[in-house]
Length: 136
Image 1 (spheres, rainbow, N blue to C red):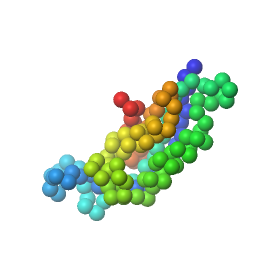
Image 2: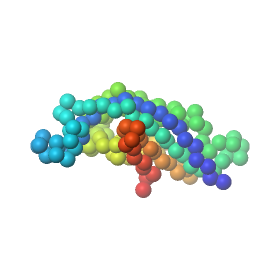
Image 3: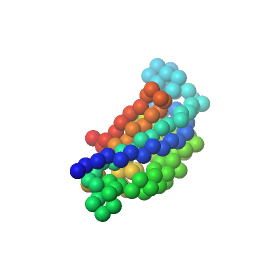
């Protein structure tokens, strides 16, 4: 029997959406006010979902304390109160869109979660704008 467990988390971070090879006018045209050279911030909400079989010994799909600790070390400690463009190595040459942030988070967590379990990351950039990535 496969069941999905979920863990919510949050972090605050600044970023700028832009391409280094484009001038400011082109970046403004494509990314709008999100291309502000002085950056802007979001209060990101994260939901990490793990699907797998229930362990008959523990009754868990995954110990949520372990998932909480993974999210803290792999995401919150590395992203919270950071300028993603400047302080997070993964975004040195990768535009920190919500889509790209969710893929980076998924890749960080995937390494730490049993391969028999499915992983899904949902990232809210605003209460109305969010993305989901399942590794596909």
